[in-house]
Amino acid sequence: MAVLVQRLVESEYAFVIHTVNPSNNDAAYMYAEVVVGLGETLVGNFPGRALGFQMRKDCSQVCVCTHMYICVSCFADIQGSFAKI
Image 1: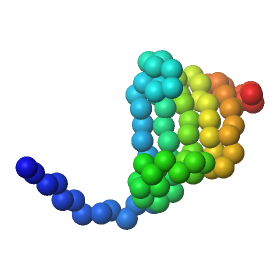
Image 2 (image 1 turned 180 degrees about the vertical axis):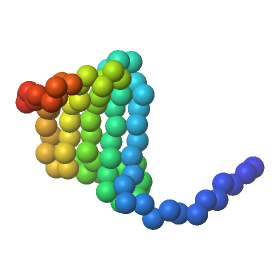
Image 3 (image 1 turned 90 degrees about the vertical axis):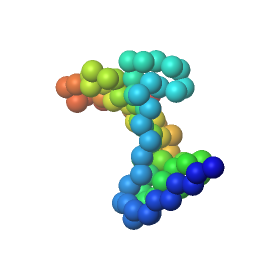
Image 4 (image 1 turned 30 degrees about the vertical axis):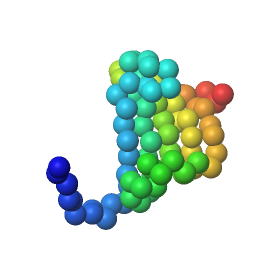
């Protein structure tokens, strides 16, 4: 049996990046969630606390899926124009 011990780093932000979108298994998109503070806020599965977004791997489109307590779907193309759904 082994035990891994690491020193806690006081971070400003914590994030998780999926290289394949886990909601639909689309390999053309990455999905990420970012929170202010330590990672336990993110992995604790508290609703509405993470900024969630997906991005095409060719950087042509970004979609902000969740923002704090508000669920938003907003798409931006490479030229910077937005479409809110």
